[in-house]
Amino acid sequence: MKTKNLFLALFMFVAGTITVNAQKTIVDVAVGSKDHTTLVAAVKAADLVATLQSAGPFTVFAPTNAAFAKLPAGTVEYLLKAENKATLAKILTYHVVAGSFNATTVVKAIKDGGGSATLKTVSGGNLVASIKEGKVILTDEKGATSTVVATDLAANNGLIHVIDAVVLPK
Image (tube, rainbow, N blue to C red):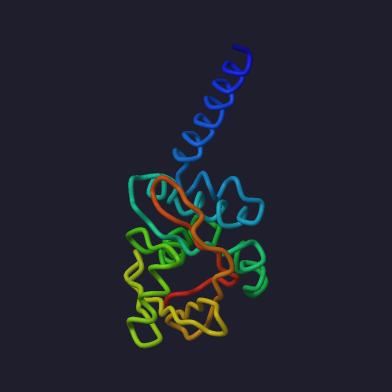
């Protein structure tokens, strides 16, 4: 009887944990990452929290703190100012694609596209995905590149792929 009760308690704990994780939005996942504190601050400053907590689904290419640190000195501080909210929102939504595209889907689209796939972002711009040395590379509208370093971080309203550089629209 004790074994049965222990098993039942363990099952309930696991089921509860799975349910809690399944209820996390893209914002919740980012907030829980020590590597995305700059991104979270930017999402808040641009008033995009509610949008990224909505039903979606969204695929977010999420730059790390180190990615933001690669920008010219003062850029992040400048963008976080209230008067630059529209510019910040455009940059952030350039990292978002409507729909849920896991890594397998992205790679298939690249292969089906003869080596590249154009991804239409929520901001209206395009990112070009390609593969170099086995890694997915994003090329922004200015010709700069970013490498996808982690994939398929699941949320209940989409997926996050972590990137090592901030991509910028025209």
